Structures are given as C-alpha cells and as structure tokens.
Amino acid sequence: MFSRRTAWPLAPNSLSQELELRREKGLPIFDLTESNPTRCGFDYAAKTILDALANPGSLAYEPDPHGLLAARQAVASYYAERGVIVPPNQMFLTTSTSEAYSFAFRLLADPGDNVLVPAPSYPLFEYLATLNDLELVNYPLEYDGGWRIRPEAVEALVNGKTRAILVVHPNNPTGSFVKKVENDALVRVSNARGIAIIADEVFSDYSLASETRPDIRKEEPRVVSHASNSGALTLTLSGLSKISALPQMKLAWLVVSGPERERRQAVERLEIIADTYLSVATPLAFALPRLLETRRGIEPQILERVRSNLGWLDGQLAANSLVGRLETEGGWYVVLKLPTIRSDEEWAVEFVRREGVLAHPGHFYDFATEGHIVISLLPPPRILEPAMIRLLEFVKGFV
Ligand SMILES: Cc1ncc(COP(=O)(O)O)c(C=O)c1O
Image (cartoon, rainbow, N blue to C red):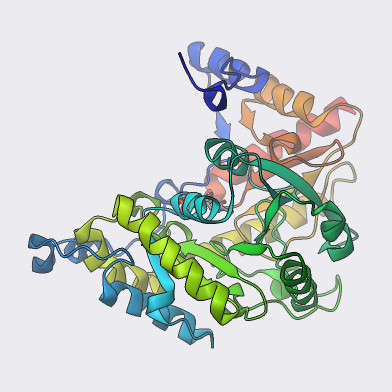
C-alpha cells in the first residue's frame, strides 16, 4: 500500500531502547544532546516576540510566491550588514530550512539523481533526500587538526546524475566553516559540470574559532555568505530557527545567486514551486522583521553559553588523557574523541545504561571512523557539567 520511499526501518535502535528502559524505571537522564534553544534557559524578548505576531496586516490575504516584501527586505538588510547584497526578488520565504531544501531539490533534480553531501554531517539530509527521490553521495570532510573540503575529491564523485553539491557553513556537527579557497574551487567544479551549490548557513552567525583555540592554526579566510557567489548557481538557505533561536516560528528563506541566466531561470521555476504551496503564514511573514531583530539579544547569550561550556570542557579534558575533542570553529556542537576500544554506538549505549548520560554516537552523522561522540554545547552548565563529569569518569573507570 505504501511508497518504497517511506519503507524506513522503524524498529528503535539500541540507544533508544536503552533510554526507554531507563525512563520506564523512572531513572534520571542527563541529556547532552539538547539542541532546542527554547529549552536551554535563555532570556528571550517575550513581549517583542508575541507582539510581533499581532500585526493588523495579517487580517488580509495578499499571496506572493516570494513571500511578503517587507519580510524579504528585512532579510536583505541582515545580509547587507555582512556586506552581501541580496535583492529581495532573488529570495523566497519558506516555513523552514528543511522546506527550502525540498524546494531546492525539486528545482534541480529528477528521481534517481544525486546530491553530494559532506560527511560527517547532519542526519536529516538522508530523509530530505529520500522524500525527494534523490540519492545522497557523501564527500569526505578531512580532519588534520581542522576540517577541510578537498575539491578534487568532491569533483571525482560528480557523475551524470549529480545535480548539486551541498555545503553546510558551519557544518553540523564538525563546526567547520567553508573557506574561500574551497568555495572558489567548488564554484569552478559546479560551473564546469553544470550543477548547483546548495549552501546551508543556519549556524553562520555562531563563530567561535579565534576565541577558543587561537593556537591551533592560522585561520584561512572564510566565506562570508554563499549568497554572494556569482560564478555558479547557488541556493543559500537560512532561517530564524538558529539566527533568532526560534525554531517554533517555522520561518526560513532561500536566496538565489549566480550567473544571470541560470539565476533568472531558477527564480522563474521557484516561483511556481512556491506558488503551489504558499506555505508561510501571513502573521509570521509580518512578524519576520521584528523576530529577526531579536537576534541581537539572543545570539550573544548563545555564543557566551557555547564558549563558556567549551572553555569548561577544555579544562576537564586537559586533566583527562583518554578523551579529547576535535577542533571546532562554530555552531552549537562539539565532537569528542574517545578510545576506540569499543564502537561509538557501544559507548553511547553504555553511557545511558551505566550513567544515564545521553550523547550522540558519531555514526548518526556518518563519521568515517569509530570513537566519536557528539554533544550539544547549549545546555546550561548546571546540566552540562555534571553530565560531562559522569561521562568522563565512566570512560576513566572503563579503560
Ligand atoms: C545544519 C542544519 N540545517 C538545517 C536545520 C533545520 O533548520 P529548520 O528548523 O529551519 O528546518 C538544522 C537543525 O538542526 C541544522 O542543523
């Protein structure tokens, strides 16, 4: 009765089984995976946020496939602050970055085509691709004290069915930004092979590098925003879920840039895709300028939390020779390196079983090797610190 694309393995994995057992016994869970900012004790501008939803303009319906112009102008100002010019007529509002991915995939690819995605990276891509009848082909991010894209390795994976190269800037969970030299090379590959770049920039305002590990290596210049790419068709995605830490508002966007002809054709086709759904609710579109402004209050709080959690963690790791962490430049997560005497899955299951600590095993994110655990740096110290201490003590006791 059902489509093959929805034939997912639905049995709970061993980690969720272990969690369920613990919950049934009423035992506490120390969650190091919490990445919902609305649950992490930040001080939101509650009145501004709620008032923003009460615009009288919401009483009329004036559909526009691009989304309300005033909202797009506010997004354009956000980019202008970063020195990037984004004309509002090259922008589409969507209900989430995930929806923007679907628009991009629908625009670019036919069933059976493929998209190149970084590994390790965000597990949702698997589902987004399957739902759009696409294959994912992983290209490796390589780690040598910092994460790198090797454009030759990416190009070697391009075949007749490849429709796009996806970059995540900075990537989840590695925290690595795309460097200008890497982007220049990917633009050349995309242009030469007639494929597009899809750039996910949801975390791009959360930069940590120089403050946390100035010693590691001289930073190479990073891309400011892929929305300024002019050499290859580029679809840049972002939204309020991370910028203003408001995932519940379901408001995001897609920006089209690149050579004039491809850009124009992409916009014309996206207008029809967007017009088919007209998915953004009018009160949200009216609220966007004010909701986007609230980033000025929330981003500094999140950056301060992530930096101080990372600083605390580094202090703990300095006294623990068994667990290390990989370099990160941004985002909300950090990758821990554990002894490879057991698989990352086994570590994660044991953390829950013995200590009640929940951390994500690296294989959720397609790490090429074992011994990686991913934790969120969003939880307040009163949650993160005791959980991390339990985790580190457990590893010490086990090895
Ligand atoms: C890299 C990345 N892109 C996109 C999203 C989803 O964003 P949205 O809530 O706008 O769909 C996430 C959520 O964690 C993410 O990590």
